[in-house]
Image (cartoon, rainbow, N blue to C red):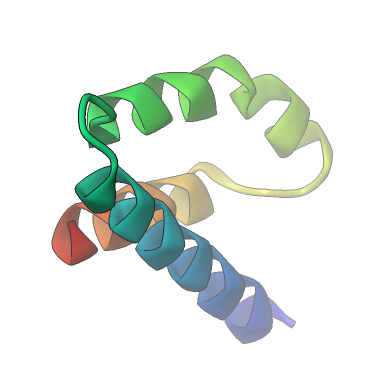
Length: 63
């Protein structure tokens, strides 16, 4: 289950990186700030900080 969740987080990060790369004025820092704002809710639903970091890392690589 952990591998499937990690793969989903990486896929979400790649999607966010593509969106931020194609949209003028929208940067990865905006997505990171939004992710930080909702992180207590995500941790409550079982998403660890490692998974959130993998989203940001995948987005930064794919941008």
